[in-house]
Amino acid sequence: MSNYFVSWLRRQVRYFVATLIPAALIIGFGMLAVTFWPSVAWSSTAIFAVLVAGLTFWLV
Amino acid sequence: MIDNYMLINQMQADSLMGVRLDRALSGVKDAVMDQAGHVNMGVTRLIYYSACFTDNYQDVCAAQKTEDVRFMEALVQLVRRHNVLKRMFEIYVEHLLRNRSSESTRKIQQALIKKGATIASSSLTNQGLSSVIVAALGFSFGAKIAIDTKLARIAAVSVTLVSYYGYVQEAAEAAHRLKQLSPVYYQALYAEKLEMLYFLIEPVISKNVHLISGLATEDDIAGAIMQVLR
Image (cartoon, rainbow over all chains, first blue to last red; front, side, top):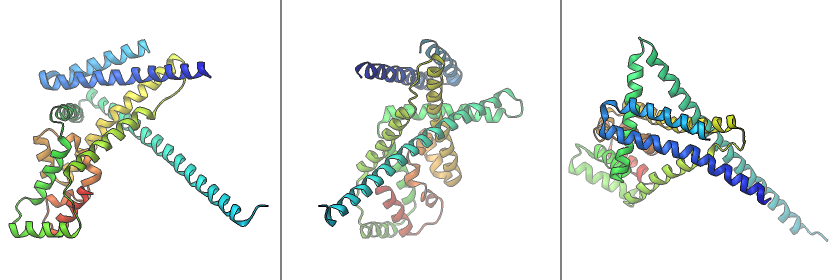
């Protein structure tokens, strides 16, 4: 029972880390982009999002 | 010996439990449908980007990019100003009451008092914020796929990230609806970089937002303000 709970908890933490951190990073980068380099905000955020997603898929 | 009273009690308890179970199951169904809707919207938005690879639909591609940037700008406003929802309601009420004579304003005030309004703008903001928090919790807890293979984990993460992107599509669609319903209010929100957050308050004001553009009676205006205050 205890092992099951621990593995379940580990799965949940991994899921949250794998979804919320990339989302927060992309949103944070996008917000900085539209504020500080608006002319290339979309393209730079898109490249950053692809890199973050790739890194997440590799690490998860 | 089992008397009638005990039998009736047990039947009532069974009935109550049945009703509770029914509500719980319908809640789960709603959450799943909501999550599926956001995944659908996220995928739709990503597919629209295929327009960027064609010559004839460059306008669609440019519009999508602009919406994404505007959404990010709206998020910046959300972080910087803290009270954006209150401001959006303020703009709404200001536009409802614009160009009204003092006599008309007094009539609206009377109508509001008649309807039993208590002026509680702070509760509005709280309601708006709570809906944001509920929505955020909804999509965070919505898609937990408890499977352990690498491919399954990648799929779960992809689906969740796409469902987050679905919120941009929802915001863009709400902004389009507002543009059709009330261009004046849309422009006012656009000037403050808030039009992409309209989807947060849309359920509260969408029924009466057309009153901004038209010639509404004092009673209509009072009704619209009451709708916001409730």
